[in-house]
Length: 127
Image (cartoon, rainbow, N blue to C red; front, top):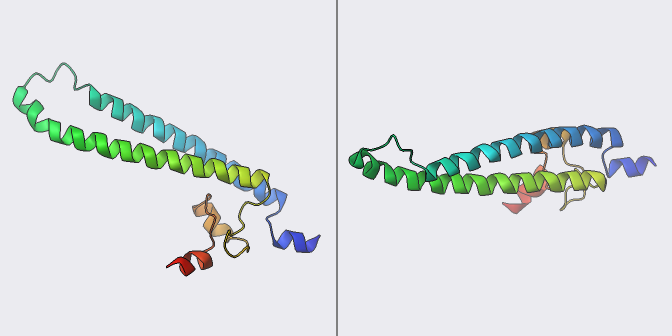
């Protein structure tokens, strides 16, 4: 049984990571809602803005803002998807195992990047 523990985290560790990841998913979904609502508000310039010169000047930044909000939303959705995949790996008891080396990923790394699938060793090999 001891050999098995070397290739995966204990159920207790997995449960701790699951709590951490679920908190991150909740926060990320909240942030995504904020990004989306900011994006929606970009479409509506508001009726108080009646000055045509200001509106023309502002249009360039509105386009820029829409593009950056859209990019932010896409990144945030990917982050949420990665976190949800990490929860699936926890349920499969494969969480925290490097997909290249098969070794356990350092706990501190997983606390910082809970959706990581590569150890630092494997990440350095990619460079």
